[in-house]
Image 1 (cartoon, rainbow, N blue to C red):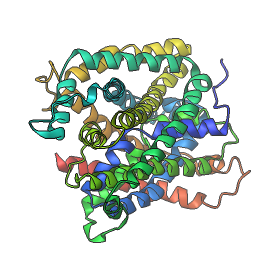
Image 2: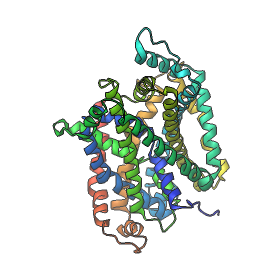
Image 3: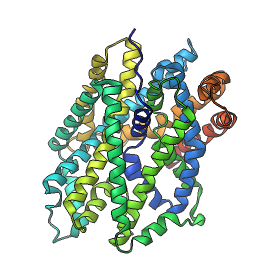
Length: 455
């Protein structure tokens, strides 16, 4: 049996794990959620939820992966053999693969906008009739709803992912993360500095940092819980898989706090970029919604700045880096499972996982175009996969993981992992296990229930 792959350095370990957590959700979802849910009050709740919910659940997943040195499915089987608990890991693998199918489409969009920024075509729009906002909307809709161009970009992204993944954990995932994460943070800091230097930027900062607690409602609390939950990639099997590559002397608690704080830093820096900018350019009433924020509002801001093409290239490079590290980490969940379960080589496992995406991701992309009329429960293929995986599977997996680690597995397993078999002080163990057992499951259940109430 081949030796289990491990990350070669602490920096590489943290960079890869942060890369798996930081994605388009931090870049576009956080500012949109913050604007919709009251600004600074939402930020306060988000930070609170990240600490109270995110870190303990992350520690449960870290302990499960590092302690078993296994993929997301086998981790449950090793601790509770001949029981149905492996289904929890199976749901995580399934959810991550469904997410990969449509996430590759969005990653393709980022590559298209990066390329159009480099060539300058992104800003070759007719502004005379309806203004920039309408022009960027039309450009984005025309691209997304076309068939051929998005498919070409998807295939490019799949090929890049295959190359990185075939290089393995150290020479592929870790090496890419060591390069990509510093680039991402440098670009964020540059944009933050530029945005804060714009005229009237203080109004945006005030909205982002001055809380109005009267705006806190039950739905705002649930949305903050959901943002904290999704921004750390909980329930996807990624953290279980990556932690199985952790060396045995890794300090799990320190790593969890480091990853969570860096993940939070990305979200906060995006807030300092977005809100001062939209305030400065009089876009305070702009609806920051997913693709609208990234592919419409920001290009409009860049178009009004000196050095439009430079800022556009740098931003969409940042977005492309975030998308690439995310797709690679999501794919690794299924690759690790196939390697462990079916004893396949990394090359074979990678091709088994990635080659079907040429079909599945194509179907997701075409659901905006020629397959737009094909609906599943009233949703396009893209929206259906998004809804089922992120709103149902991920919360379900996290609830079951907390129950498993808190109630099913013997407590000494969790404690031994957090304390490295007694080598570290376990001062926070009792609080962590209490949160995983009693607090996290009902809080995550709120996210799940709120989704069904919205239907």
